[in-house]
Amino acid sequence: MKTATKITVALALAAAGLAQMGITGMAWADTNPPLAALGPPPVPPDNPMTPEKVELGKMLFFDTRLSGDASVGCSTCHEPKQGWGFSDDISRGYPGTKHWRNSQTVVNSAYYNKLFWVGAAKSLEAQAPGAAKGAVAGNGESDMMETRLHFIPEYRERFKAVFGDIQPKLSNAWKAIAAFERTLVQTDTPFDRFMNGESGALSEEAKRGKALFEGKANCIECHNGALFSDQKYYNIGLSRSERWLTDAFAQITFRYEQYAKGVTEEMYRTIKDDAGLYYRTKEKSDKGKFRTPSLRYTVYTAPYMHNGAFFDLREVVEFYNEGGGENEFDTKTKLLKELNMDDDEIDDLVAFLESLSGPEIKVKTPKLPEYAPLPPVN
Image 1 (cartoon, rainbow, N blue to C red):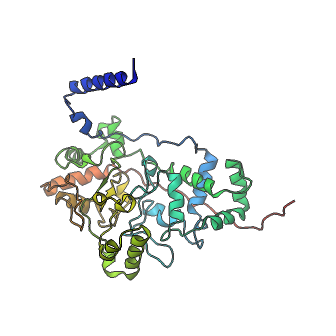
Image 2 (image 1 turned 180 degrees about the horizontal axis):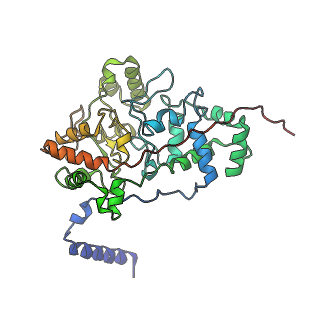
Image 3 (image 1 turned 120 degrees about the vertical axis):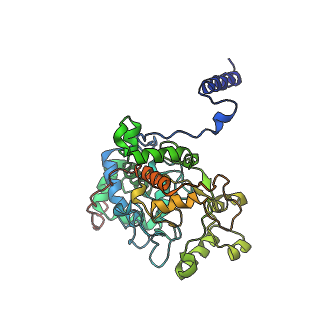
């Protein structure tokens, strides 16, 4: 059978099967992935997990020497006690600067197909250097960061044992950090237990909230599947961060980012809101769009949204209940509309959102190895 014929037959069989479930025509193509319990995270074949690699990655995650002036590290903006994010509206910046977006949690980031708010990194291995070398984040230089690793005997030993490096390679540091981050997953939530057959895992309030989530509130349109994210990009009408109005450093950062991302002179001089995905695609239709975040672990990760606009889940639900907001871009998604939920329904929906978080993920901060002179070369 020719390939084209096989594809035609497969599609016909799929359509027939879906028709038995009441999904006919092309409607099946628009069906949202159902909510589901979360399974183990994917692991890339070129960076397999080992306990030794994870332990090394944990040390490097907390080590501030992987930055420009050795004062900030992954854990600086992704604090375990702050939801593995940062509990201010905008993340910390490199000393002498301000950041310009909210710090996302690392928990469950292993499931994303792209990282950062606008998908700027294709993997955790690519995200780590993007943050460590970002001008308003880590501001690190590759040669300096790698040289520091060479002057730490314990790292020389660990990199040799894990990767076979004669001297630690910075590229392998990012792999180790990514391996550690893949252990920061949470699958033991009331929702997951409910989906795995434990009917009493959700309260009656949360069950009503689940029905709203999948029905009247239509949250499932974007927050679907096991991750509670379609990993697509939308403009929901969020306006600028309040900091842009009063904080001089934040204003400087915002203008710097326009310059760094190559906007037109006219846009540089006039833009007031974060253009989001547009900075990567330069498509006008992408202005103001950001990736749908997962709703898992959100009990611990306030504030919410790319600009940290809301500090509790009820505020988020009320924002959507009102049909979203307004910003300077004409790309706001047509999916948003007033939901007309009453206070009791909002309470139920919040209860369901809270069921997507389980026990707080805590780790003991590792003791970091010290510098020592390089051994003589024989």
